[in-house]
Amino acid sequence: MSLLLPLLASVPVPVRFRWRVLRMAGLDTAVAGIERSVSFWNRKVTIGPGSYVNRGVKFEGAGKIELGSHVAIGPDALILTSTHEIGPSEWRAGSGTPRVEPVTIGDGTWIGARATILPGVTIGRGCVIAANALVREDCPDNTFWAGVPARMKKSLP
Image 1 (spheres, rainbow, N blue to C red):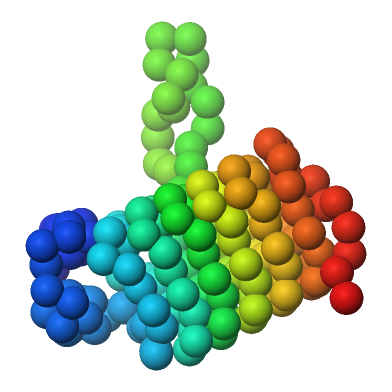
Image 2: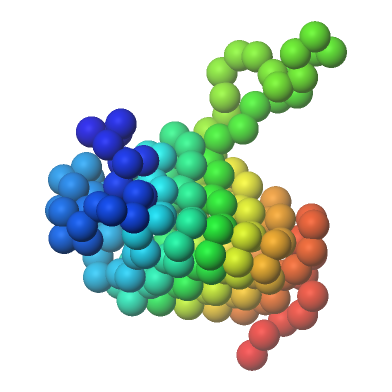
C-alpha cells in the first residue's frame, strides 16, 4: 500500500479513487480539501476538518504529521519528519539510523507557498508562515514567521 501512495499524487488518478485509497491506507483526512498533486510519503498524517492542502505539497518521512482544523498549506510546501547527523568527510549525508520527529500544525494556521517545516517542529494555533520560510523551531500561537531560517516577525491578534 505504501508504494501506491506516491502514485496517487499523479494528475490522471480520479479523485474518488484517490480518496478511497487514501482512507484505505489509513490516512486520517476528515473533511479536508486536498489537491491532486499532493504527495503522502507515509501513512501517519492526520488532517483536521476544514483544512486545505494545495498542489505539490509533500508530506515526507516516517514520523507523525498532525494538521489541526482549518489549516491552509500553500503550493509546493514540504513537511519533513526525518533527518540524520552529518557524517564524516567521506560521506556527509550521514550514516546510521535516521532521527524521526513528529510535526504538529495548530488550528487555523496558514503555511505559505514553498515553505519548509523541519522535523520536530510544533507550529501553534493561528500562525502565519511566509512563503519560502524554513521553519526549524517551534512557533508560539498567533505569530507571523518569515525568512531562512524563519524568525518571528510579530505577534498576531
